[in-house]
Image: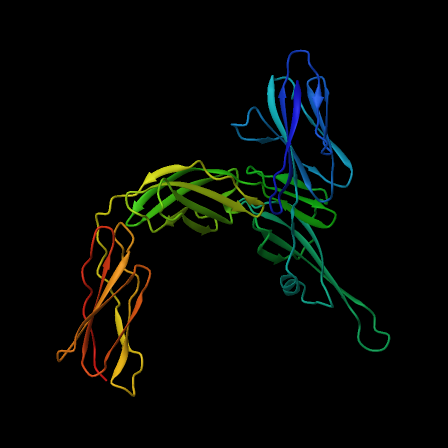
Length: 416
C-alpha cells in the first residue's frame, strides 16, 4: 500500500505548507491514497505525478528523501505559482520499495530599492518613484543576489500649458539574503534582462522574476551540527556549524543550555548575524548542561541541533579582587550630622563559578567604627548611613562557590 501523509510547517516568509508522501510499495501494487489538501498524486509507470493549486508569486518545490534520516533534495527547478494547477513529475519515484516526498510552497521576499536610494540614483521624485526590478544572477564573490532596477517618475511642467516631464534611470543592485540592499550603482548603458529568469545556487537560495518584480526564496536551515562547548571561568564557549544554508544567510542563532537534574537556571544566549560561536553564563559548578543551537534566516528557524551534554567544572578558582570601586556622599552638603555613603563597583571576574555575594566594609577614622553590608552577586551598589565628619576607608570582596576572593584596594572618602 502506498500512502501520502500530511503535516503543516509554518515559517515567516518561507514554508507555508509541507505535504509528505510515504511510499511502501509491494510488487505489482499501484494504489495511491491522498489527503484532502488540494494536492493530488497519480502515477505513470514508475513515475509519480504531483498536481497542486498555486498562487502567485509563490515558489513550489518538490523534495525527496530515501528515508527521514537523510537530507531532503530538490527535484530540479522550482515551479512558479500563477493561480493555476501545476504538475511536477518525479521520475522513477515508484522504482524503490520506499521513499519520502514533500511539496514546499514558499512565500518569497521581494527585492526592491528603498525610495531614498531610488531618489539618490534618479535625482527626481515627483510624488513617487516607480520601480521595475529584475534579478540576473548571484554575485560570484559573495553569493548575494544581483539584478537591475529600472526607475521612473513623471513631473508636471511649470507654467501655463506645461507638459509632463518623464525621468528614468537604471541601477545595478546587489541584495543580501535578507533582502537588504548591499550596493546600488547607476547604469549608463542598457542591460539585457529576462523577465522569466530563475536560478538556484548550491545552498538552495532561489531568485526569480515574475512580472516586474524580483523575488528571493531562502530555504529553512537544517539543524546545526558539530556543536562543541569549552568552559572558560564560569562560561561555556559554544561553537557550531550551520547546515543547509549559506552562512551569509543566517541572521541570528540562539544557544541554550538546560541543566539536567538541577534547579540551576536555563541559560540562553542570542547571537546576531552569521557568527558561529557564543558564550553561555553564569555556569553553576559541577552541573550537567544539555546544549542546543538553533539558527534562523529570513525564512524562519531551523530545528534544534542534537543536544550535547557537558558538565561544568568543580569550583576551584575564587573571584578576583574587585576593581574600580568608588565611594561618594549622597548629599555633599547635608543639613544634619549624618549622610549616606554610596559605594559602587563593576562586576568582578568570577573565577570558575558565579559570584553569589559581595561583602562591602567601611571603617571610619577617629573611632567612628566599622560597618559591613552583604549584597547579592548581581548587586553592584550599596549604601551606609553614617556620621559625615570622619574620613572613611572602603573595601569590597567577592564570594563564589569556592570561597572568598581577595579584598579590593582601599578607597578613601573624606568627611564633609
